[in-house]
Amino acid sequence: MTQFSDLKLDPKVLKAVLEVGYTTPTPIQAEAIPHALEGRDVLGIAQTGTGKTASFTLPLITRLGRGRARARMPRSLVLAPTRELAAQVAENFDTYAKYTRLTKALLIGGVAFGEQDKLIDRGVDVLIATPGRLLDHFERGKLLLTGVEVMVVDEADRMLDMGFIPDIERIFGLTPFTRQTFFYSATMAPEIERITNTFLSNPARIEIARQATASETIAQELIELSATRRDSAAKQKRDALRAIIESEGEKIENAVIFCNRKVDVDILAKALIKHKLDAAPIHGDLDQSMRTRTLEKFRAGELRLLIASDVAARGLDVPSVSHVFNFDLPSHPEDYVHRIGRTGRAGRSGKAISFMVPADQKYLEQIEKLLQKPLPRGESPVIHTPMTIKSKSAAAEDGGASRPARARRSAGSAKAGTAADNPANAAAAPAPQDTEAASAPSIANRRSPAPRRDTGPRKQGNTRRDNRDAVVGMGDHVPDFLMREFRVA
Ligand code: AMP
Image (tube, rainbow, N blue to C red; front, side, top):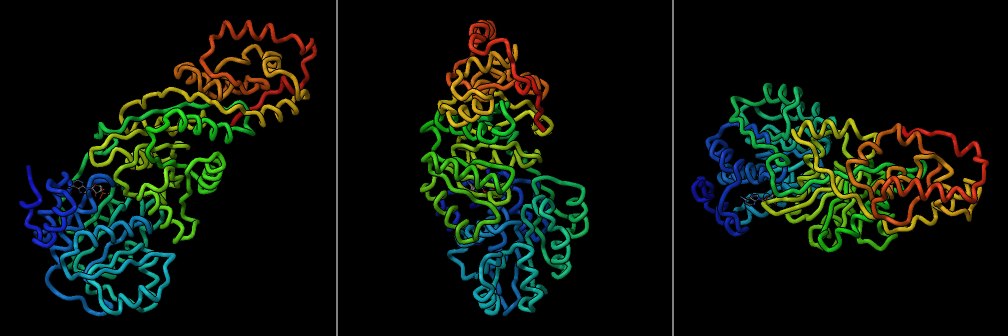
C-alpha cells in the first residue's frame, strides 16, 4: 500500500503530515497527489470525509516550496463555498506548511477588510477565499490574480447550489491560463461538467466512491412521524427529537442536527436549550464571530448538540461526531449524503437518524434512489414528555378542558386512538404500520386526536375496546367541528 513517504512530497510537508499521525494516504490522496506533483490538472469527484483537502493542500505546498510571493499577487488561490470551509482549508494549510516559510491569507466575509488588505499587500503564497469576498477585494483594486500558478476550486457542486458559478467563471478568467487547476466536486452536474471542460486542461479524473454508500461505519435510521395536529406538528417533531436524544442517552457524545431552514435552526436550538440540553445554533445569518466560537466549542467537545443549516455545516470537519440527525429530511438527496458524512469519519462508527413526515415522501424516494437501497426504518421514539400544554389547549379547543383524553379520542372517530393517529403514538408504533399511517389520507381521516401519554405499541383491537368504553361521557352528541377533516400540506 502507498505510504506518504512514497509520494515525493517536500520533506518538510512529509514531516508535518507524519506528525499529525497519518502514514497512509486515503485513496483520493494516493491517486491525486502524484498527478498534482507532475503538474497535471486534477478533477476530483469526491466529497468531504475522503481526505480531499489534504489531497490538494499537500501538493500545493510542495509546488510552492520554491519561489517568493510578490506584493498583491498571490501565487495560488483556493476557492471554497463557505466561510467555514475556507477556514478549514486555512487550518489544513497551517498544519501542513508549518515547517515551510509559505504565507497565506484568508479572505472571508464577516472579517474586516483592513487586516486582509495588509496581508495581501505584503504578498502571500496561498490565498484562501470565498468567491464573493475575493471579487470584492479584486474590485477594490487590491489584488491581482495574474500571478496565480495554482488554482483550487473546492466543493464546486455547492458553489453551483449557492449561485457562485458565474463568479467562479469570472475568477478563472482573471488567472493566467497556464495555471494548474485542482477542481473538486461531490457530483458532476451538467453545469459543473461544462466548467471543467472549459477551464481544465486534460485533467486526471479521480472518482472516489460516495461515502454514504461506501461507508459501512454509519448506521442509518429513518423514523417516520405523522403529526396529530397541523398546528402543533413542529412541536411534536421537536418532542420526538428530544425523546430520541433521551433514549440514545450517553451514546450521543456529540451530534449535528440539521434543519432545512435557518429559522428552524434557531427555534430548535432555543427549544432544546429550554429543556436544559447543551445546544447551539449555527447558520449563515449569525454573526461570523459567533459562528466561529460555536464551531470551536463543538470541535473542542465543549458543546454537545450543534443545530445547523446545510450551508453553515458544509464541510464541517470534526473528526468524531457520534450522531447526525436530520430533523428535516433534506430536499436535495446529495445533502443527505453530505450531512450524514459528518459522522462515521476516518473509520469511526457513527449513527445518522433522520425524521420523515408524510410530505417528505418524494425526498425519501430521491435519497433511496441515490443510495440505491432503502433506508432502514428505525425504532420510533418513546415520548416521555407529557404534552400537557398541548393537551390542555386541545381540550379547550374541543370545548372540554377537563375531559379525559381517551374520551376525546373515541368520540372523534373509529380510527382515533390507534397508534397511527398521533405522533406520540405513531412514534411508538412499529415502523411498518407507521408507513401506512404516515400517509396524508389517514391523517385527513383523523378527528380531534389527543396526545397519548403512555408509549408502548398498542394493539388495534384493544384500542377499539378502550374507545368503546370511553364513549361514556361524550354522550350522543358529537360536535360538528370534531367531524371536520383537515389535511396536511
Ligand atoms: P476531508 O475530506 O479533507 O474533509 O478530510 C476528512 C478527515 O480525514 C479530516 O479529519 C482529516 O484530518 C482526515 N484525514 C485526512 N487525510 C487523512 C489520512 N491520510 N489518514 C487519516 N485521516 C486523514
